Length: 284
Length: 268
Image (cartoon, rainbow over all chains, first blue to last red; front, side):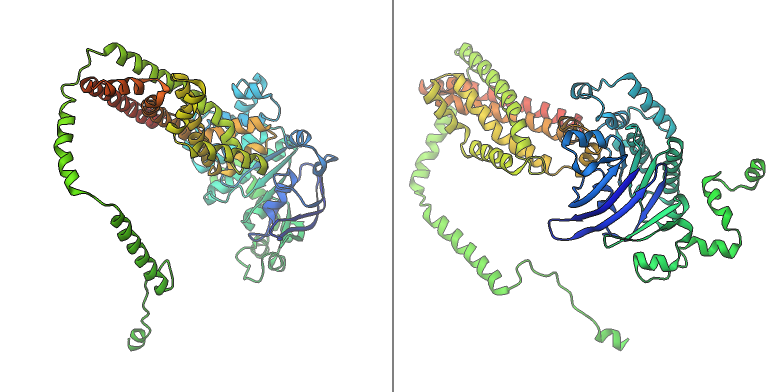
């Protein structure tokens, strides 16, 4: 569905952020992109919707060549790619509803959007999404009144109301506490499953990446150095991506194997979150 | 213990200019220049002493302020000034929006940027009074010349500050709206406008205040308004009326000042 071929990005300063990236993401796949700071993760996802203009190579989404589009067609193509940002990137002085509806800007004309007269179907969908992310009681709050986790939920709703095929997610948990991070990641993954969306998730936290994504791609100095299932990511691979370090605390797989129950791990994190014994019993 | 004492290291904030010689030379140069500058001002203390009682008499002649005798022309002057102030602020702000957008480096391509910066620089080069003299020469006496002068001065002021506010906005919010597939005008309306609006409202009110004060100055060179009335009063040696006019101006400026700071507090 999404296919990058020989994608190169060289900045004006001469730095090569991406060196001939080949990558394919099938429909419905949630893929985590990990790598050290400056590896080119942000550049990569921004080249997909051309917030950053790639130097050469091709980006194809559903057989549309994104790199060759004129500005009108590019806007049309961007509607199919929802983006979720580090630090949320909500428009602070707009209300929650305005922020969510801004995801429909690619679909409505200027004057409609100027007078905030969106089609009723958009408004219904906005309410539905806000309900889904648990914020339907905050519709008219201004974005700067929300907490970090709430803001990111609005960011998710804004991306989803675009009705995208692909989510580009840039460090969604970078400024959230550990619990909220998991909730946000879980929400993103659940929504991808519900709507059969593909996603590229840039993420620093290797454990979180392994917990929620089946496929992990490791980027280092603008090159893909690992591409495989989350469970195969071991000490050797992490060293290749990040450099020499003692990875034993980061690798979940090692602990799992010692516990002799590797298969249980993934359902545990996707399933019921609380591990109070009575919950587990009643669940069974 | 003895070892840690030996390892004691001193620290001082590094000076802004590293070389002490250059540092002291700069200080000395500044001091010499200041001394020379004060030296060129030759003050005739005898004339200052003569002037003091004259000033006293002059100020005394303002009292008591006379609102009654010339009320008609004071009223007309104020009315004309307010009219001039409001229209020139509205027109000036409206015109400075495209100029300000063009003068923001993060929005406009280089040629547009340079052109808009040139407009801003040009209109800031001339103070209101010079512009007013200019327009009085072209369009003749009256408030229209004053209106034009204030409008153009407003473009320089407001366009520059708008551009600078846009340049210092949060790019992440703008990027997020661009990523939705919004058109350029939608992008302006949804990501730039909310970010700059509160400050722009505050600055528009501030400019209203400036334009009212400047309308008095502009009137003195023939641009109509309360300035013309004030000049006439001085020319006729009707200092009591002039005092009344000055009090009215002070009152209005204070009113605008308080109400604009109240509004600024409300808009955030």
